[in-house]
Amino acid sequence: MSLFKRKKKNTETAVQETGARASAQPAAEQEMQEDMDEVLNSVLEAPEQAKKKAPDPQATETFTCSECGSQHLIRDMRKVLYVCPECGKHHKISARRRMRNLVDPGTFRKLRVPVPVLNPLDYPEYEEKIRALQEKTGMDEGVLAGVGELEGRKAVIVIMGSEFLMGSMGIAVGEKVTRAFEIAEKTKLPVIIFTASGGARMQEGILSLMQMAKTSAAVKRFSANGGLYIAVLTHPTTGGVSASFATLADITLAEPGALIGFAGPRVIEQTIGQKLPEGFQRAEYLETHGFVDEIVKRQDLRQELAKLLRLHDQKRRPTL
Image (cartoon, rainbow, N blue to C red; front, side, top):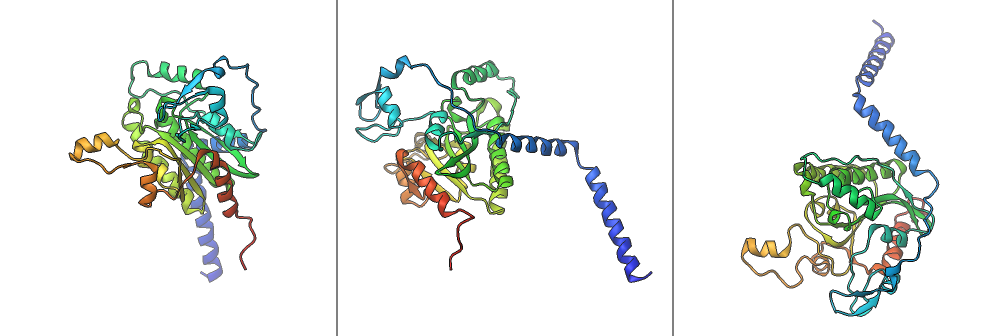
């Protein structure tokens, strides 16, 4: 057989084998790809329009700082993003409010990743609690994910909401975080994640712990393909979230005073029978020991993140 005929036959065989493998592709993978295409298409839709809300009667009520005891009007605290004007204490803030104050007005597009309410352990009243929180918070799960712009630069942004079961990570949260990285990889966008979580969700047992490996693998794939991942650790970032995607970022920022760690300080002290150093597991301690790159005040985060996106913009002019 001539060399040309041998090469032609080998090529035909390779094509046939490739076709056989493609036809043998599991239907589940094809469905997942179709679902991914649908999600990507939804990202490109028009931005969500902010709904006008009726005046809040609670806006004139007072807010008491848990750190210094000073009292302020709630409407005034909203203006300063719930950072105490007296002592600088960074109080918890909802995911929706944080997103509104972070992205450029009118640019946020929510990632539509439908995840059904699952109760794999038949945990009593779990499904009812999820639906009640959906109605109360306006979120379908413990993370708010979407594409938004910071000073004109697009990014995939994921914000965990401590108001939704303490931002705990279950199947739905793990799926949304993973999808966010996959979509960012396809659209060549950076990822910014604000963490605020008590850890894995106990109502879903070992399936919630499996989300640690799932999200970590998504970060690894995204990083291997040159993606930029910025994490902002807020109070608290603990448990399975801190032990997975929260601490795998290229750049790690933190809010002042945020509790960051796996187990809480009291649990560690009881376990080892020793007193922990002053400020242990707080953002300032972790910055001193190289675990956090920079501590940024809440009112400065938008500007700082926009600066980082500019510095890592792939379209920037090459250095001579």
